[in-house]
Amino acid sequence: MNKPIYRYLAEKKWRDFKRKVLEQRVAQLSIVPDLLGSLDIVADIDLSFGRKTVAPGDFVDSDISDKMPTLHVQTFTPGEKLVTVAVVDADVPVPEEDGFSTRCHFIASNIRISPNETSIPLQRITEDDKKTTPDAQKVALPWVSPWAHKGAPYHRLAIIVLEQHEAKNLDISRLSAINRDGFNLRSFIMSQKLKPLTATLFRTKWDESMAEVMERAGLKDQINIEFKRKRVEPLPYKRRTERMR
Image (tube, rainbow, N blue to C red):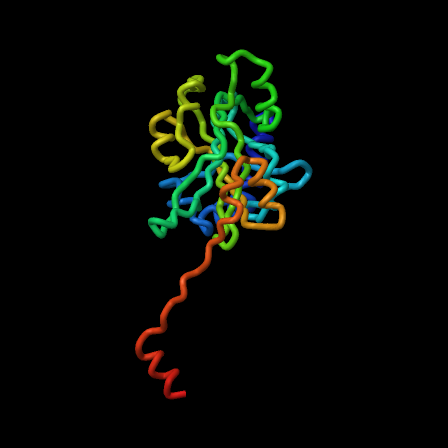
């Protein structure tokens, strides 16, 4: 991939099929416009949890997504880039408003990639941060396991790779002050002068392992909350029809 001809052929093959599938899934599951105003996907991305490769939009069991994934991001333009990775839940229920909000589950910045450096192992990056000085750390918001209440609709977990302006390092200490709840991805991109390169997503919902995942995450008070659909009264003409029967 350090030769232009091989980058050209790889990009052509990717755009002929794989990019179309990714673009379709991002559109079908409304990552645009729910989280991003627009997205021109210019880099290939693969998501895996351990040995499990996750296709865009697949459901992932909670005991698997409890651990941090690995990304493989293939760029097709020469040179190195510094990127930020953000993981955002687009479907956090807000019962009192009868709506949804967002939550940021992970942010790491100043990650170096190139056509020959494609791996972004979030677990290893986090572990390396523990051994280095604060000014060299990359993780701003540590991984929080995705979780969903019983009875709630599925959650979309978007993973967005963002190019840093002019390959300049971001201040991790400032990013660490960002609020997870109500996280606004558009505002984050504008304030940090970032440019989306690519994105993928997976989905999660309540399963038999979710209670244990929530307990490990310190969410014991959320485990027994269950969402139930409101009973919708039939329209008047339907009630008359039912009485006549």
